[in-house]
Image (cartoon, rainbow, N blue to C red; front, side):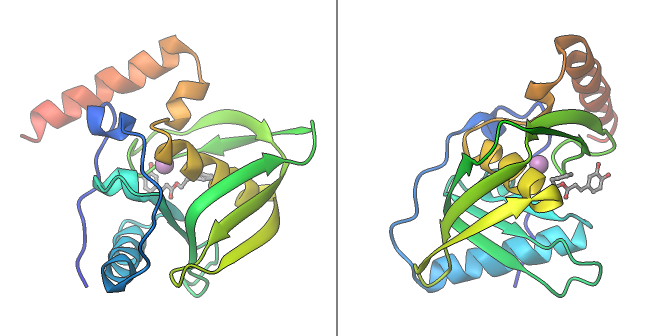
Length: 168
Ligand code: QAP
Ligand code: CO
């Protein structure tokens, strides 16, 4: 297993649109394991392959308290089931230290595949609904800061750029 390094906003590579997974092999299994290890090590609840500079449609997640419920979403798709919206203070391992309120559909149908390529479907609400929509955004080159005002986004960008300069 290997810990991968996480790209940080405003790295342009976070804007890459990820490609569908077509081959379900040992290499994919290894990527999933490495992403889970990277997410747990960083105290995250969700991680998209885009964030580790791998541009494949792979998401890992664990919303449990004790890292006991790893979830894998390959080629995920999301369809809103209601017009009701939900506000949540989102963070992101690629935007460390910043949290902002984002509004998204509150109930969604998720279609995805597991590591073996088997399709599954689930209805997501609450934190799971927020998280899968946030992670699917990453696969499309989008970040939660794209949902907030330009003023707030630019402030966050400037603070992170300064931190990156200081830590070089
Ligand atoms: C995405 O985010 C998410 O700033 C996953 O210093 C977030 O795992 C979905 C994290 C909220 C739904 C709701 C962020 C860790 C982790 C930080 C994360 C930080 C350390 C964020
Ligand atoms: Co994120």
